[in-house]
Image (cartoon, rainbow, N blue to C red; front, side, top):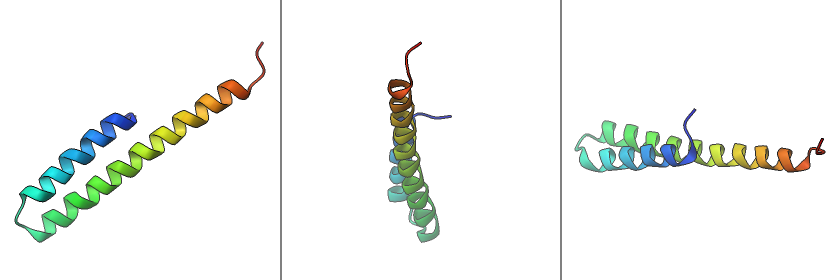
Length: 61
């Protein structure tokens, strides 16, 4: 699974590709991929924060 920074790099690449194409269909596709990658980055951060919370919350043995 990719981490948040990898997803953000992908989002940047997709946004760049969206801006570089003259096809409206490709532009829409790459823009959607950029948004999806950004959401995946936010999700990865959220999952990491939950893992940290649970680690801190669980009783120490």
